[in-house]
Amino acid sequence: MGSRGLGSHVAGPVVRTTATAATATRTPTAPSTTTAMRTATPTRTRATGATPAVRPARPAAVPPSVLELLRRSDEELVAAQLAQDAHDRFRHGHLAALRAAAAVLPAAPARRRSRPRPVWEQLADVAPELAPWAALFADGAALRAAVEAGRTDVVTAERAERTLAAAEDFQDLVRERWGLPLTLVGVARAG
Image: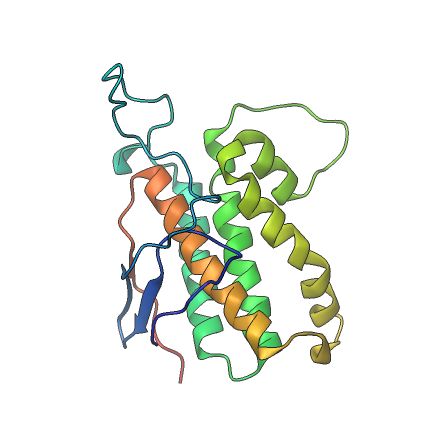
């Protein structure tokens, strides 16, 4: 696959994705100039020399549930990349983002709520720096539900590509947050 531009919807690096028989690899190509949706990365501030409180976890400290969610997200990304129809590409891309968002939640302190809440709402609460991403994907949830209900005509090819590109970038941010590499391992190419 070639690189995908995200336009003004999502900031972050544009990612080139390739799938091979045994692995799929994503490597950053060119950073986006839009910074509205960038997350805080752990760098020292010049004024104090201190490291901000948000730090990625060391890979050894990553819960198995997070690794499983990211593995499932990887599988959805590959399925989206290989999908021939826009509605399938959109659905798999959105599901990849959903699984990546769920992988952020185990790092948050447990909260008791009286009602179940959507992952996107929880994500915005536990990781405010990811709130713009949560809003972007929450906006697509009703569209994904329509596709899953059989309305395959509601997704354009452009919307599917934007969603897939955003899901790839979002998953990269989640991996960085956990201190994981951006390389996908063990996702076989279908067909």
